Length: 449
Image (cartoon, one colour):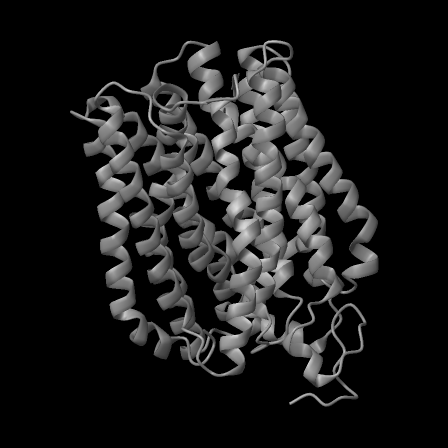
């Protein structure tokens, strides 16, 4: 156990032992801001992609949904390659710079009219996200020692950065994209500006607030670290890695439903929801700011709850938290089922159905996503953590592809109510199963979850 004299965090902050329960490392706030701008760029573009394809390019709903699913799934496939390259060769800090620059270039390509630049832009964002996404999460995990009770709370705070960007993005990019005075390409260009701001922030603060974090293997001078890189995996490490794969399987059920936000739920908002307020018809894409706004409201409360429960030794294990998250997501789609039943009668429904569903989805997301990132950082061997973060995002690859394929089937169902019932039932069943096996997974984690 650390003493008062040797408790110094990686940023050089001298902290008393008692302070470690609440005070977060300074580097967390830098990564918070960097991730905020990167997610601004991603969610700004995501908010208008399907609407652009359907309303501007006149694609069918099914074709637009499939492209949406293919694009968002590939965004989560490339991180396994980017994580491996960071672990083996370039380090996470260089990977972030490379990824951010490529992502920005991709968004600026989308800002140029033409199908060649459209597809080139999507490809660049896919490649750039592979370098960026697993490594920023890895660096957050590197801010904490093993068994630091601040870790889950820290990832929840970091997740607020994700969602601050996601909240602002549809408001800015959606307004520009859906506005006749500006147009879709201005919305895509605004997303690129956000990524450039995040890249500038990281270059400014990385040496000041993240010294020694994210170096390449060649730059690491620790003899212990170099020796560990050559050691085979132990039995406990293999079991912990197995837990990552098992939990990632259940995460597929969550994100396949959750990612309807950019596809079928986006189309539902555009066509079946009353959007006039005080004489102003607001863009359909603005509904996608409800989820991140709710996260900004509720994430601090949940972060504090995890720390308080951890102090008292009553914090649930991570798989149990995630099981609850799946159930909450399913209940949120229960509200969509009720709203869709009214839409099936040919009326424009109240926006409160979507607002309520997105809010419940948010509660489920908070119980699953940030603690999932934290879990990967706790269970992964240090020499493999960026690659395992990529493996974690592999579940999002499968889920996003499924989300697009399922959204494409919306028109084949006899009613909207029947379509959205899929996303109510499947996550609840998966959540109950995950809760049931969580004690077994807890034993396999050997005290790290």
